[in-house]
Image (tube, rainbow, N blue to C red; front, side):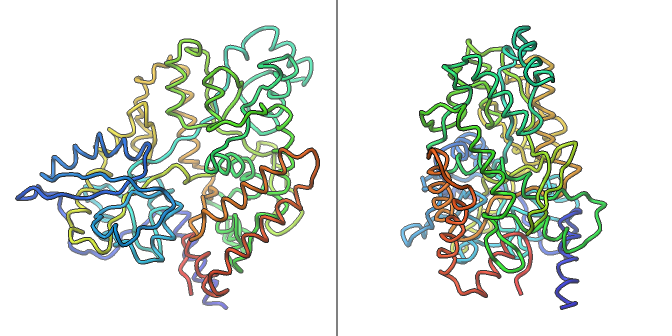
Length: 496
């Protein structure tokens, strides 16, 4: 038992600090091939494919190789016909399934050494210490990161009648929401004054991925105790770092624990202000001028700014947080006067992973190292249509001029992205699940929660109990011991 405690403590120290260097091994150099060789890259449609079509081909040209991009559907493991693929572009939530089926080659440890061209220490801890690692080995390199922000109709907020009306009703100023309670009050006020036929928020997302993101982002602060670098290691702190959707100690679901129940109860209160029409993305209604608030990707802020009806009318801020949290495994609620902005991260990130069976593994790693390097990474991040970040250097010198905002909005956007991704005072963001079988669990969660939200009655606790029971059935695909090991691996621990 003592040995287990020491092992967990060592891993916790690793996660709260910065990654160290590993033993020196032979480096991979990025050198141009003597003859044209084709690398086959399987990539889902969307932002990742856009990155490959633009910057990926620049890296390929520098290496003197051809790049063949083929489509793959996110969530589907490769079949025998994919044996010719050299690189998979996968979402961070797919890491567990790909790793456990032994489809991924480990990246060379040499890239973590000081002086390596990849500049490993410049990657945000979210990537270099958590999402890129499985069994303490590097299994991928980031192709594009993420940048979630809250958008609101600043032009409406600034109107004197709304400033006064809001203050009369809530005894506080109308401004960017800091907590979900603020978010609720703003939605309530604008619905009451008749914005968009009394529907100030977009309808529920019809996209499972987006729906899950919105719900878990809302719940994160209620379920997770914030941990600072100075906190001493205790069982309570270990729970706060490693347990979110599952208890890292016993592998049991936590989706029906007090924090998630509270989050769902509050999430449903927003339903009265939502449009009854489902949206493919919650940002769509906002960009059409039919919502006063939304949480979305930063690149859509640029899209809104290019819309003549929304130009210079959009305000930007960090995602709201809860007003406290429930202590893990209990009904004890601990209020936090300054709020609890625990970010939920990982869902928008994409990684390049080398096929273990590829005959061009070294060349494939050379390509990924160049594409994920500081130079190409910055070129990817500054594109307004992408605007996703993976490095400290990108956050320090984000060039947002191309998005077309004035200096004040540009500053707000920069600071909002930095706060969400670097969260310097909070070292334990809530991370997306990397457990094999995540798509089945997502479907169970979305089905039960969406049904509860649109039903006139029901119990949040009973709803999440149903989700937990469905998850337990899914988890029976593995033995109890195997699944407990997977839970540990998925949060960055070494399975015993």
